[in-house]
Structures are given as C-alpha cells and as structure tokens.
Image (cartoon, rainbow, N blue to C red; front, side):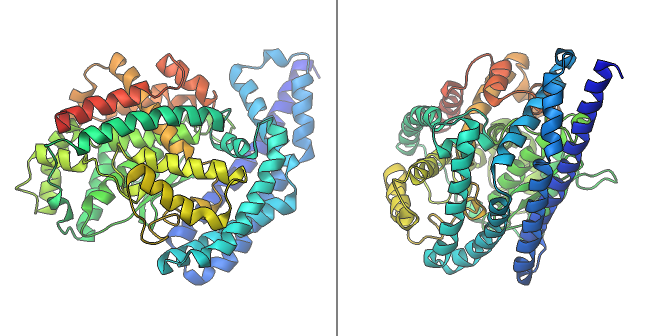
Length: 512
C-alpha cells in the first residue's frame, strides 16, 4: 500500500474512534438534560450510577491505546504535511485530549462523575433548605477530587497552576494571570459606568415589570421569541425544544439542541432574557458546519466564545431600542397588560443598572462583577488561600465590597449557581470573557454591516445571524480563542470595545 494511502487509512481509523466517542458524549448530554428536566427525584442515585458508568466508558474510549498509536503513526508519517489544515487540527485536538485523559486514572474519572451527580442533587435540596451545612460535605469531596485531577492535568498541559489547567479545559491557552489583568481593567471601567448610571437623575420606572403574566402566556412569548432568532421547535424538522428548570441551560449536539428556562408570574422579563440567552447558545451549536459533525473541530471554539453568542443575542440584540421597536407591539398583544408602557419606558426598565445579589438576574453592566467575584474566589480556593468552610464569609464580603449587597442566606449567596455542585471549576471566567468577545464582535459587525441596527428594527435577525455564522460558527474549533478573536476583530482580546459599547448605550439611557 502506498505511503499516502496508509496515512489516509490511519487518519480515517482515528476519526472513526473519535466519532464513536462523540456519540457517547451526546448520550451523556441528554441524560444530564433529563436529570434536570424530567427525572423523578428518586432517580438520583440510579442516575449517579448511570453517569458514572458512562464516564468510565468515555474514559476507556478516550484512552484507547490504539488512538495513541494512530496519532503517532499519523504525525510521524513522511507525508504528514500533505494533510489539510482541518485534518492537522483534528489530529492536534485528538492528541491534546488523549494526552490529558491518559494521565487521569480511570477510577478518579468515575469517582468525579458519581460525586458530581450526588453533589448537584444535594445542592438542590440544600438551596431549598437554605443550608450550606447540608451542601458543604459533598462540595468538599468534589473539590478535592477536582483538585487532584487539576494537579495531574497541570503537568500534561504545562500550566503554571492547577487552576490554570481547569481554565484551559474551557478556554484553551488562557491563564488566571491574563484573566486577572483583563478583569481588573473591566472592573474599573464597569464601576465608572455603574456610578454614573445609578447617580443619574434619570432613573427608570420598573414597576410594570412585576405585573403578573400567567405561565401559559409566557410560554407563548418564549415560542414567539425563538422564531425571531431562528431556533426551530415546531416544524417537522425541528432540532430544539424548550423545557422548564430551576437554572436555565442549553444542552445537546447539532440536530438535537435543547434549551430550558424558568417562568415567574411576577417577573415575565426573566424568561424573556433567559430564552434569548439560551437561544444564542443553541444558535451556535446548530450553525456549526454539518460536515464537521463528530469531528474534534466540530464543536464551539470555547465556552467564552459560546457565551459571546448568548450574550450577543440576549443583550446587544435583545435589549436594544431597535429590537423593542419591532417586538414590543407583539409583547403587548400577548400579555394584554402593557398597553400603557411606551417603548422608551420599556427599554430603560429592562436596561436598569441596579446592583443585585443574583447573577442570572443581573443587569448587563453589573453582571460581570458577579463573575469576577466567582473568579477571585476560585483562583484563591485552588491556591489554598481559602477553604470550603471560608466560602460563605468570603462570598458575602466580596458581594458587599463589589456590589454593596448584604447577603441574607447562602441560597441567595454562594449556593445560587449550580456550577460548583456540578464541578465546573474554571468555567465562570468564560461568562465575562464572553461579554468581552461580544463587544469586539459588535465592533467588527458594525464595519461589515453599517445598517445592522436598522435590520433589527425590521425584525430581521437573519442578516446578523448569518454574519455570526460566517465569522464565528463556521470556524468551530479550528482555532484557539485568542487566534479566532484576532481573526474576526483584528486585535487581541481587550475590554475596550465592550466598555465603549456600554458607555455609548448607557450614557444615552441615563443621559450622563
């Protein structure tokens, strides 16, 4: 057999193994979705065993020695340079995952999967009971397991700290040192905008946002909103659905990407913006290149880039004057109780700058401070500067220092998010990085499509969606995030464009 034929055969064999692994990961995703949406409470222990077994299977498949042999044969083949950029990236990503997974003991992977399921189940009960004492023992177990994994991955990834190894899992090649610098700049800029907005004589009237809107009406609003952004839940070819959960999320793969939301009768805006946010995530997943399905490059670039898409749809699009000039008449028709609310009054209210305790309900300006607090805590936690027992006090102190908020109980404090219960350490920075990316994307969009906001006013999101697909979605995981943002925006990741966007928007709203 000719040399190039051997190379192609080995590459094809490697990609078949990666496809099998991607299918198993998609099963894992749907089982996690079911756990949050449809599973009865009694099923938690069985689901722990099921997900533990899936974790074991995923680890076995990821560390199959044949994958390592195939990688070596491909990379050492004299015709390796004949592979395309896409094929080389697939080999690189496969090797990266293989090197990392082979260093993690199988029993540790299984233990983490089991403990994560138990911890998130305990988190739900502890949050309802407002009892950190109930949550603490399981969180300690999960943290120690994840720290052990991080210390192992630190060596193979070549990171400076265990926490950097966890960050790299979500934002490749990003470090806590770089994030600290970015977040310090971001914090300083946000504090100025918050101060100017909250001290302005022109404050919004938000009273109408607490008018009761029945859940069935909010469901109709949700169905209407996803049509605007092109997330199909109704047609015979639909690849999505909307369900209700405590904490909204998106899960799935290519042809089956599901979103969740929550409905509060006295806070209809909450579901509106969670639908737009999760719809942005789903849009990214469903607009990846179909021919890249089951390939390492056929995923989102990073969680930060994923967040840039959700925040773009939720905020830059969904909280804009132009969108509400188009959609407010429809919303009034659906609710039947907003006829006296003008567009100006509505837009100012949904963009009210007001420090709060809950991240998912935070306004666009204060939101990143919530994320910075979590990043600071995680960074110091993994550095051994604080312990699990210290978390409530440290959390409460930072909320007072950053947002002037006095936390009454741990359910509105450190137990408000599910991430630590799941074991998603290193994930939180992505939320603020996503906002930073979204500002850079907007600056690039304005250059390419000067009438972008006029398109929104016509109810045409399709043009913007296509721009995002062409410039973000279509690249999948072909580049690391630092390279992708430079390719799109023409410069390194920086806070300038996001802060400029906020200043321009909020100086108009608050007339400062």
